[in-house]
Length: 231
Image (cartoon, rainbow, N blue to C red):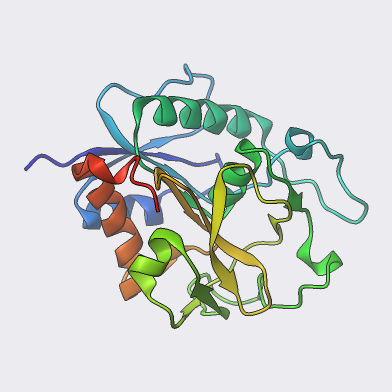
């Protein structure tokens, strides 16, 4: 069986190798796209899309300015690239997996907003610890959707490398996982075409649940009935 092509969007400063490795291990061919001035088009033959981690989403996209005390780390060209990639993936019926920033992109794309700095909120979980990227920082619990089917009702420990998080949930999205302090850690569209998590499974390549997320992307690619299947 041929290996499907999965486009991975990253930023210029975002290491792509962890994403490429897990895509290859899952049985697909990764193609990394960065905002480099080339046409904002998904290549012909693309079978799936991964929105990787990285810089913050431009606050103007959810009707906000930069809040006091927040260090700007935006990448507007990447926002433009990923908005275009999402437009095309949805139009073509391709499955999408969002990771960390990718979850935040998905939420804003669907009309939601973000907490720009979790340290300025009442959430007190360990979401950006000074540890290695594979450090298991806190637990999450799947509560609905495809993540619940993959993970079951128990707690799972995940790594965590983010300062921002979902504030107002986007339209047509459901919450599928929640951290032990209440931060939203998983969202998806009701038709399962778009699934996103707030942690970094690409940094946990041997973790059973991390492997399940990438295997599920391949399952949705190879069995198109997943896309459009309601919960």
